[in-house]
Length: 150
Image (cartoon, rainbow, N blue to C red; front, side, top):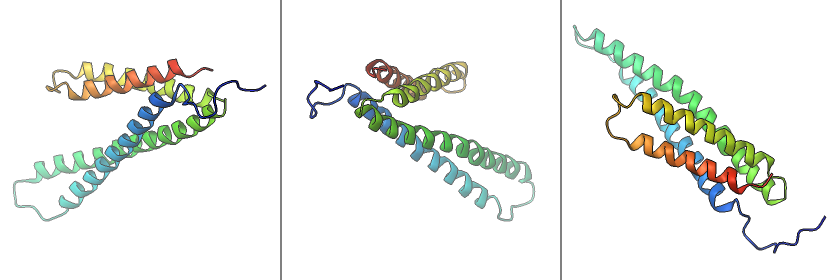
């Protein structure tokens, strides 16, 4: 089976899958920073504290441990999505778009669930910036699914 397309032509998935890949690597960077800040907060909490500040230290320790725990899980997910998106793009360039399509579907689902979660927390998060970012991520993932021909 020969391909009648120009070998130098940009595949239809390229602009959207490129943006999706960049967003995944930005997420990897953000979650690295989250884990790093949790480690720094935990290290800062190990200093001797003045009497009467034990409850603040316990809260700081709990926040630091949460940042490290959630950040590590989200970091692993972001790395997996970035690596699979990269592999899927290469495979799609060679006529096997299933991996890229599946990753984009997973990203769209993850984005949709995140949008619902952020809408549920709308009273706690006053600026809508996180919701806008997640909605754009979801839109890019959906657009990638639409451009990939399985």
